[in-house]
Amino acid sequence: MMNERCVLIAGASGVIGQSAVARFAAAGWRVLAVSRRAPDVDAGVAYEHVSLDLTDADACRAAAARFAGVTHVVYAALYEKPGLYAGWFETDQMETNLVMLRNLMEPLLTAARGLRHVSVFQGTKAYGAHLHPIALPAKEDRPRDAHANFYWLQEDWLRARRADADWGLTIWRPQVVFGGATGVAMNIVPVLGAYAAICRELELPLAYPGRPGAVSEAVDADLIADALAWAADAPAAADETFNITNGDVFTWADAWPGIARAVGLEATYSAPFALVDFLLTHEAVWDRLVARHGLRATPLRALLGESHHYADLLFGVHAPDHAARAPVLVSTIKLRQAGFGACTDTDAMFVKWLARLAERRIVPPPGA
Image (tube, rainbow, N blue to C red; front, side, top):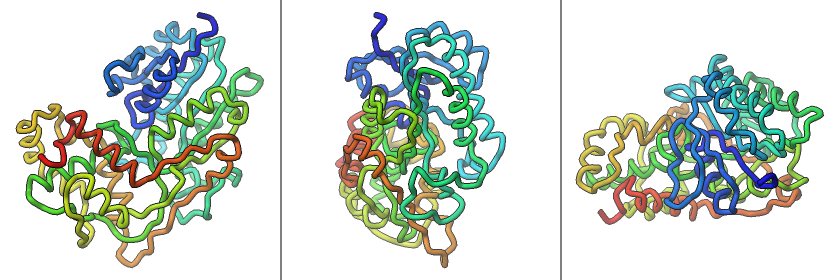
């Protein structure tokens, strides 16, 4: 059908991509899920998987014929290096992320004559949160933080293509994202689930690994998916940049008892320690759990992706003992005034995603 709405979701197997696939499919959209591996969504979710390596320009050009009917794009693909954090400062990491976007969008902009809207993602690194304390709350209309970042490379490329085109562009800056994807760069829900399962097996409490302080915000991947669906056809979203959060604030130390209850363990506090070291030291324990509980046969490193490194960063494990952890807070007033006001309780979000891991047989249930 000529008027059919078709969304191409790049990075469909990622933490944002999987929720977006489910959300748009539930709303009756035709969904093209572009990723190297298929998104891990519930049975019955209707989508077409396009297996594609976005670093391969020839493959992207060859796939362009499948993009002719695309009316909307959600670009949530991401390249990160092993170890995660160090790569944020390296030019080749930034260039690779630009190349991936360009490889997909150049043939798509030629093929998809009915394109109406593109959503793309940045984050709090746009405000320099990985480099220095940020002005609170961070707002979208402030000048660019003066540092090298692939966000600026992608944004400049898209804005140049947007000039005189018929499609709108929305740039999203989510806070820390939580969802159901495994084996990805930045989703610590599987990290928490695996950590809890290993602690239960070793008859240990759920010790908080991080440092105190550091007020922050979270955002549920399902909430982002709702916002993407809203922005797809909302005139107020076109050519705008929006922060997005759950709507509340939290600290990891204060959220920890609720996380422990969700996994059926006692919360305790001790000196900071690296989850990277703890988890990789207990790979054999994980393998034993997978076999005994009939879980998906996922090796621990494949389950975690690079997210255990992200967890250590969020928990401030390697921060100097004397250093105060600066809060990272963003304003969401602009998004609410534009017309999207949905919110999610962060404590309830942790409970939801940890329960879903067990329901999908990725981790053992809390009582096991």
